[in-house]
Length: 124
Image 1 (cartoon, rainbow, N blue to C red):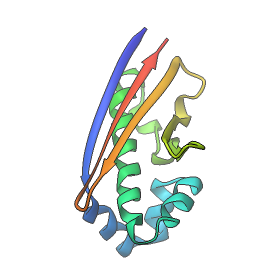
Image 2: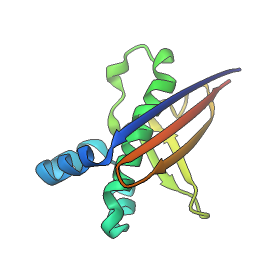
Image 3: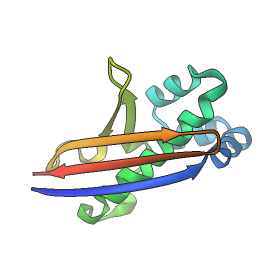
């Protein structure tokens, strides 16, 4: 077994500016339909949630990039973070669904200015 982790931090204002200036073009390039629905349901704090999911995508990429032959084959939407029935974030790496990944664990936090994510991947 092999354990790899990745971490990312992002300024929420960067994601907010991208969404406000590029709109659906940015959202549909980076986020899955489920992620957009979840973030949009958060009202005034939606940008914090978008930023947190962006940080997860970056952290997940860092965690799996060593094992990927062509890092450009992974798209933003290949990494999806949704919440389970108890509200805990759960991340799937769709690009590598049939690979040797045994488990993906994610931790997300955000405040007024920043969002951070840590992703740990357990390979068989």
